[in-house]
Image (cartoon, rainbow, N blue to C red):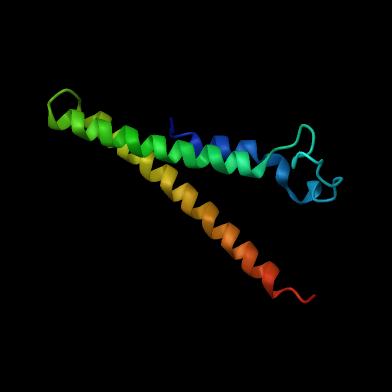
Length: 107
């Protein structure tokens, strides 16, 4: 479930991926360095959290339509969903920009 601290938690999870960590040993055969963060796992968690936030917003919207929920809960769920989507789009844009920059590098 995504919370308003979703982005802060994601940033804290990838804090160790800074430029200082680029000189580490190559990845192990399993695809991840022992004890190091796994980018694909982080991305998968972000996708799952975004989908869960959207589902929660849909459920809250349906509940308010039937009179079983408060409008404040719906607004909160929609805001959380919107924040999660905006964070995911920002990460996507950064990954695409990094890919394009790598492709422009001379070989």
